[in-house]
Length: 156
Image (cartoon, rainbow, N blue to C red; front, side, top):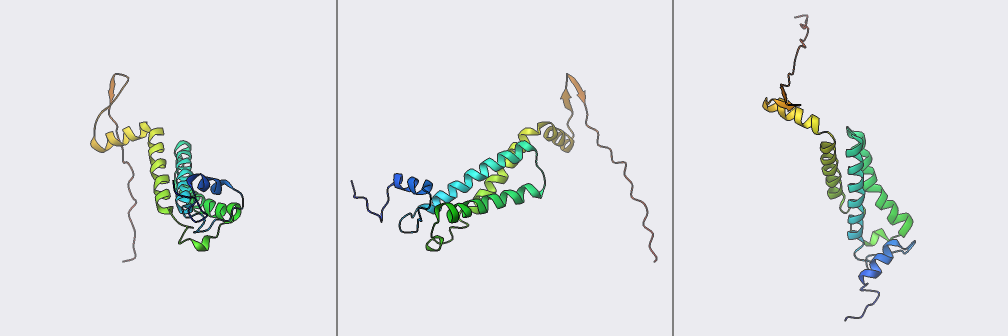
């Protein structure tokens, strides 16, 4: 078994450093901190994506707040809780950010689709013009477009 020095921390030592207040990790004492931050961002993205999907959130506000949470909560954790030397790492502030945002959007779409199965079936049947069966009766979906644009008057 190889000897453990301050240059080669063990896995148990890594997790102690993750949860220890004001541990001041740097690239030499804790080289796997970027991996831990990636996992932290993925957990935030998973939880926030589930929350968006169950609440039925639509629009850009949920996406922007999710991006802010995924980006800035780990940065604040590094600076205020761990007091990490972020300058010793290469781009630790934004490591894993695109992957976490993609995971949040994927989970949000998946959960939203699970919560709105009737709307999905209505859309599919309208797109392929299939009769939706309900209560042993067939009821075709009718989409009416009764809107007519008023004539445009120009000076020419």
